[in-house]
Image 1 (spheres, helix red, strand yellow):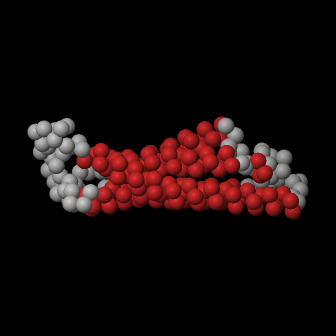
Image 2 (tube, helix red, strand yellow):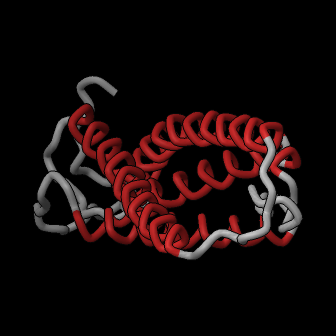
Image 3 (cartoon, one colour):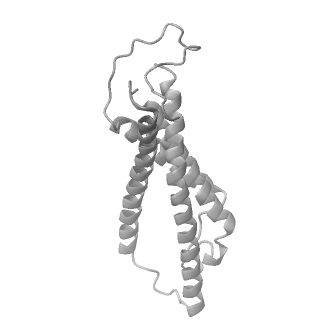
Length: 195
């Protein structure tokens, strides 16, 4: 990729060239926003499908929903797959929908496409985290069931589930950032092939 200059289209696909004027800021917020919305929508869709298959029905309260011990590796893998697929979609959309940069060195285009994917992932992650914190705050206002006995074993089991969930979430977020960045590059390269 070193030495490659973007600004010319694929001569096989466009034998007469392209008459697209030079344009574009380094970051296209409209493309990032579109990628963010796509990533969040796919995440919600996949999480709902996971709930339909029983992968998100854990409850810390005894007698209400599934026991914390039922959080399985399968549920963790579903969370990881959900994050990765939504990150890939968001990054790809951001790369593909950004403006075409003419006359830039290939390394700069690669960096900008990577940044589009990463910023899309980061924006979607922050939006979902803010919503989750708000939902948790609202849920904490509801009174706990009055006659629910808790035991040391139940509390320890809930702690283990929380630690496992955090490990799967952290892993999926780190790799999701990478996947979104790569998807941004793929989408950007495809964008540059067509004026």
